[in-house]
Image (cartoon, rainbow over all chains, first blue to last red; front, side, top):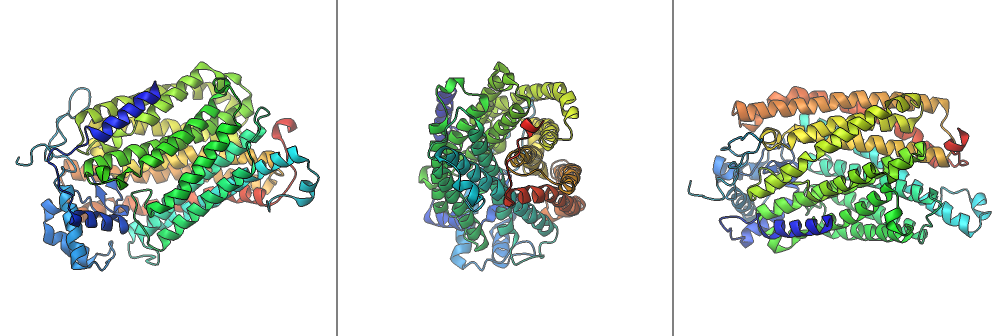
Length: 134
Length: 468
């Protein structure tokens, strides 16, 4: 019974509840950016939605918060904490496209929430995802 | 095979040879695990220094040292737990190990996979996800090794399964959970998962949660098996309470992953279900504390025995970690702790405080059964190691919690979002992490060294139970 519930719940999580409200076209450029993200193990230092390493900042909303030029400067030059990976211009653009696509899916950390008596915060997610115009 | 005394081996009949082979493969797994533990401690120290002094040791930069540290930690946990499974299976008179040579194939494949993964990291060859950062092709030998392990265990276990002690159930389900979760961790390679960042992250952490649960099944199964081997208390392995805890652990293995992704904008019901499931851990907490209080006199009585000492320490760490785990599973608290060093404190507390204590208890037990007893000098050093490890771990975790609380306070209450400002504020905690990590390394080394020496030096088997 437990196994059936697990298989059923896994299927539900795979197909429902994890879709983005605003569909994002996963272009060739975004795919390339994601491959670069994985190939340089960016997650060792950076977080997306608070998940990843702590050596560098969370990059979920870095494009909307700081702007493309800011991100480009760091990716191209590196810092004391971040190596210079000598990315080409097309690679930098691909990474920015990937980070922009992540940025469009939500906010991390959430900025609007409401605590209830049982400790949950029902409306603190999806503020961007459900209605991007707000 | 190099660990065997050849003259002894030549005198053995087929049946005894089979038994000896199984014994040796278990020692190979445990010995490799101990080497990996030393490796993960060294790389952990390097990582903590690099965090505070980023321009130090650029030969192997942080983005390489961190996955090496994590991979060696996982090698320690899985290899030592698997070595224990082979050893305890061998000791069970009702079990006849299926094709014992396969356990060497199993060892060889996993060792090859781990070596290739470590070389890939050193060479800067990545391509995977957090904790499985290597090129996905290297997952093939890992997967093959686990299929072989599953075949050996399921073919070896006596029928009917319903009569088996709870620790066999835990190990068997641990294998199945690992195989499924490891497969699930690679779903991102399919465009349906990989091209949707929310689905991708959610499924990734669902699978990672189950992978952690799978090794917990091995480690906790080992603890129960070990307690039974020492106490011979049948209720411990066949009782209702044990099976209730097993099914509760299985329930958590299947469903308790969502608290990792509270802030990922998936549907709210994913959060509600995760929250509800996480709170069932309160039952585990209650039962562990009750059991611990009842076992206290026994522990005191046997405090001179190393497995008892480490099991006792693991129970204290279980209580502390469960309190922290339950607290950070409450969404209102998780909002402040998520993505801070408090999460690291929780995972380090679990891997060192609980898993390592239980696995060291198992390693001491196994070595005491198949090797000459430790010298008085080694016993004294291991005793010092035990206390140094536990005291330094308290300081180590205190530093991480301090850094996490400071970071949380600054980013949420004070709304200081500048990364460098937050880093400067937590720097004292991160600096204190280095010496406490160094003492932790020394403390564990004082246990690793005598254990490794026992494994390397062949000697006749000493059964402490018969001796007593």
